[in-house]
Every structure is written in C-alpha cells, then in structure tokens.
Length: 328
Image 1 (cartoon, rainbow, N blue to C red):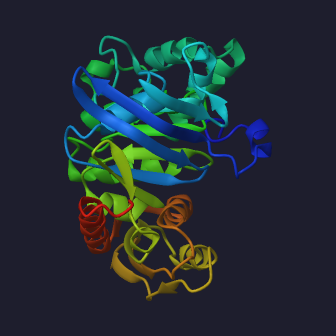
Image 2 (image 1 turned 180 degrees about the vertical axis):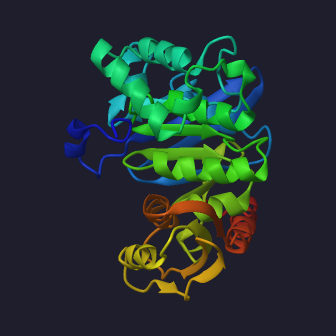
C-alpha cells in the first residue's frame, strides 16, 4: 500500500533515526514544561510515551510534529533539521492529536481530499493516496457520508487516515484510544499496528496494558525529561491474542518464524473460527510490535493483551532512581 513506505525511502540507512529530539526545552511563562529532553526514534519502532496529566506529553508531540517550536534544542526528521523555513519536511511527519481535527460538515472523501491538497500532494498522488487510506482503514462504505453523522470509532479511523495520507516516516499519536469503547479500542490497536509498518511511531497513553502489548520501547516524561524504562521490562514476555481464522496453524508458524525461542501453547478454540493464542517470547527475540504485525496480517486480530506488571515495577524503580539522583 502506498501509505506504508515509499520505495525511495527503502534506501535510507536504518541506522539514521527517523526522528531526533535533542536538548529540547520549552516553557510557558514561568512554568518549565520540557528541560533538556532527548529522544531518538528508529524506523520500525513503536515508542510508548507515558506521564501524568500536565507533564508535557502533548507539547512533546506538537514540537516533534513541527506545530510548536522549542525555546532551545533541535528537532530532526531523517537527519534534516525541522525549522519554520522547512515546511515541506513536516509532510514526513503524521500527527493525530487527542482531539481529532475533523470538519463535521464535510464528507469523508471530501475531507481526505482536502488534507491531501493541504499536504501538497500532486494530482496523481492525491487521488491514489485518498483511495489507499480509504481502503486501509475500511472507510469506503462511508466515503460519501458526512463526518458529523459518524461514530467516534469511525472518526478515529478518519483521523489515522489523514495522519498517514502523505505516507510519512513518523507517526505521532496523542491518546489515540481515549474515549473509545472496548470494541473500538481493539480496532484502534489493530490499526496502529498496521500503520506502524515501515515507520517510527510514538503514542502517548495512560494504559500500561496497551503499552505492554504494542511497544518496542517505553519512556516516561518526568520533570521535563524522559526516563527510559529498562529494556528487560519493555521486552516482550507474555502475550495473549484472540484471532479469527479458519485454521490457526499458519498463524502459529508465522509467529514462530519471527525468532528462535518463541514459546506457544496449543491454540484454544473459543468458538467458530475464534482462537486464543498464548505466546511467550525470549529475551532479545522478536518484539511485541513485530508479533502484533504478523497476527494482524495473517488473521483477523480481535484482541492482543500484554502483561503490564513488569512495566509497573520498572516504572516504580525508574522514578525511585530519578528521585535519588541516579541517572535516568
């Protein structure tokens, strides 16, 4: 699909981060929000951004998207500085704010065509890009409907579609599952997994289980700086997935083919075409995000849950070390 990764970008070195925030600082009047924040995002990573309300998560994402400028520090996209004089570089960053930027009187297709035009896509790419995101997020059936008449789940799909319409290298998601019902959350997780292929993703959330299931790395915003949780806590451990397919055997083979040391119990039948998979991954093996992508592409992924207890423990230790003056 065109919204995944352009062929020209395949030649870029995977060693070069697709997004870098270096010594970023931001204050609002007397309040310091960010103070020397550093973050490098690699292609294929899904980074979970945690932090209490008011800690600066949204400010961090807005600066990374080029919608807000730091008082100090630098932002780079694929090694190029993101500045007000480089507006075209912003097209390589897709951003979904907490409040999805939709125009309720417009139709879904009309809105996506408008976004494609604002992003500066050529006429040929314009039509193809709209068709691609409509198909990728199952929006064809509502393409002619007015956005204001659609459910929140559909609105979230449209928000992801607009963020990906220019096939960006970086995808930034601010509380993407906030306010969704349980079924919509499952849908949103699957869409995030599909959208992460071939690009770097950062998403902020308060839900540790969500982070445990999807992320390759987790950072916590505290005192204006990022604390990186230990790789052991963020590495895949135990996952439970529910998939819909006629035969789970090819799915099991695909997951086991990701890396050595993957443990899987015999799939449990939950009903017609519904199967439960219990997966345990070894240290240094495949990431949770890689497993999620395989499940989503080889079957219909109904749900994917992770064990959040290791993250809770790692977060407590990291914050205790930060308070004691230990390096984050």
